[in-house]
Amino acid sequence: MTEYAPLSRYESGAASARIRDQLARLRQHMRGEAIVAEAIARLAIRLNIRPGEAAQELARTAQHSGLALVDVARGVEPPQEETEKPPEPPGWLQGVLDTGHASVAYLTPVRDATARIVDFRILAANESATTVAGMKGPDVAGRRLLSISPGSAAGLLDAYVRVYETGEPFFREPLEYVEIMDSVLWPATLSVRVAKIEDGILATWRLLDEEELLVSGWERAQRLAEFGWAEWNLASDHTLWTPQMYEMFGRDRSEGPMALEDLPTAVIPDDVPVVEEQLRSLLEFREAVETEYRVLHRHGVRHLSMFSEPILDANGVPVKVRCLAQDVTRSRRRERALAVAHQQAHKQRQRAEEEHQVTVQLQNTILPMRRGIVHLPGVTAAVRYLPGEDLFRLGGDWFKVRQIPDGRVLVAIGDAMGHGLTAASVMLQTRAGLAGLAYTGAPPSRLATWLNDLIVNSAEGVTVTSTALIGHLDPENRTLCWTNAGHPAPILIREGQVELVEGRSGIMLGAFDATEYGMSTVQLRPGDTLLLYTDGIVERRGADYGTGLDALLDAARSCDHDGHDDPEELIDCLLRELGVETAEDDICVLALRVF
Image 1 (tube, one colour):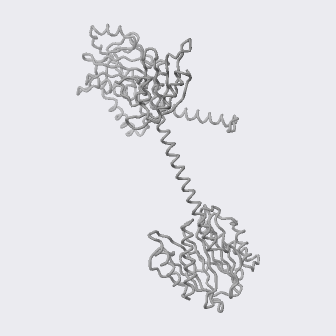
Image 2: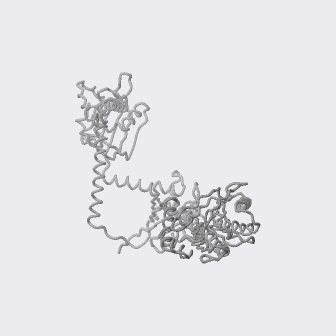
Image 3: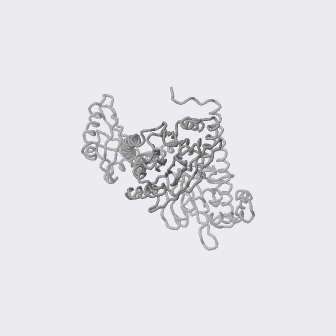
C-alpha cells in the first residue's frame, strides 16, 4: 500500500482543470507571439529592411498609437507578391537539385538601398522540398525566404547571411526550429546544411523522423545525466564508445576507446580489486554486474557507476561486453558534504547538551528556590520561577530577596539577555555580585553602577547585558527606594486598583562603561502588593509588548477582586489568567505583600 492517501475524483479533476487553464493561457500567449512574428516578417518585406529593424518599427507604431503590440501586429497586411520575374537559375543547378534526397533549395541575396543583405530569394527548389508549414518546392520557387518562412527571422536568416558573407558552411543537427504560418507556431526539429555556391547559397534541410528524434533525445539525455555507453567485441578487439565515455574517463578521442584489459590502469589503486571482480563476473561467471569505482581524471578523481553485462552466443560463450556508465561524482560529493554536516550537527548537539547540563546545574545552584514564601520584616514575599518549554534555551532570569544587616530588605529581580550558558553565567555574576555588594549598605543606584562595572570588565571583549530592578524596603516606614536598569516597571495592587509604578529608568547593565543610575521612591501601605516580574510573562509570539503588559494588568485586577491575600495564591491566579503555566521563555515573578 502507498503511504499517500489516494486523491479523490474531485481533487484530481480540479488539478486537471488548473492544468488546462494554464495550457490555455500558454497557447494564447504563443498565438500572440506568432501574430507579432508574422507581422515583423511582413513589414520587413514591405519596407525591404532587416527583421530587427521591422520589430523596432512595429514597437514604435504601437507606442505612438497607444495600442497593444499584438493589436498593431494584427493590422499589418501581407505584402503584395512581386510581379518581377526572378532571374534564370544557372544551368548546373538543376542537376544538383535532382540529386538531392532531402529538401534542397538555392537562394540568392536580397539587398536594400545600401547593399545590405536583408533577405534571400529562393531561386529554385527540388520537387521533394517541403517547408515546415507544408509548402512544396514548386510553390516556393521565386519567393522571398521571409515570405514562405517567417520563422527564419529568429536566427536562421542570420546564419544564411554569415554563410554568404564568410563562405563558411553551416550545419546543425538537431536544430529546434519554430515556424510561423497563419498566426500559429509550428515547432519542428530539423537537420540543416548550408553552403555558399557562386552568388548564392545552397540549403538542404530535413525534418527528423520519430526514430531520429528518439536518438537525438537519448544523446541529449546522456549529456544531461552524464551517461556513457560502451561495447567491447571480444573476438575482434573492436570497441565502441560514446563521446560521454571519453569525457568520463578523461581520455582524448584521438586515442580511441580503452581496451577492456586496460580498465584497471584507469582507476585508483584501491579500486583495482573492484574492476578485477567486475571482469571476473562478466567473463568467468557470465553474469551482469553493477559496480562503482573511482577513475583518475585530468580534473581530479571521478566516481563512476557501471552496469555491465556479457553478450553470449548460442553456446553460452561471451562474445561481447556492454557497459552503461554514469558519472556520480556530484552525488558522492553531496553525500560527503551531507555526512560532514551531520557530523558537525551531532557535535553541536553534543555541545548544546553539555552546555544545557552546565546551565541547569548553575541555575539549580543559584536559584535552588523555584517557588515558595519568604517571611521578612514588614513584608511577605512569594517567588515563582518557571523555565521555558525549550530546555536548551534556558534563560538568565533571577531574583533576590533578603534582609541586610542594617534592617532593610533587599528586593531585586533581573534578566540576563540571551539563553544558555552565556545567560546563566551573566546571571551568576550579577546575582552573586549583588549579594556581596548589598552588605555595604550602599543605595540601589550605587549598587547598579557597581554591577554595571562588574559585567563590563568581566566580559572579555564580548558585549553582554542584563536588566535589573534593585530596591531597599524599609520595614519601619514602608518606603521602597529602587533603581531600574532597563527592567519592566513594577506593578502596585492597592485596594482594588492596579497600576504601573512609574520611576526613573536607566540603561541595561553592561551596555556602556561608567554608567550612573538614578533612584525612585514609593510609599507603600499595609495591605499593598508589589509585583516584580521578568519580560517572559508579558512577551508572546505574534503579539507586541504593550498587548502583553495590558493582559498582565487585567489579570492582576481580576485576581485582586478574587481576594487573594496570600501572595503565592496571587501568583497562581496570575499564571492561570494569562495561560502561562508553561512558557515559551523563562518567567520569574516576585510578589511582595506589605503588612
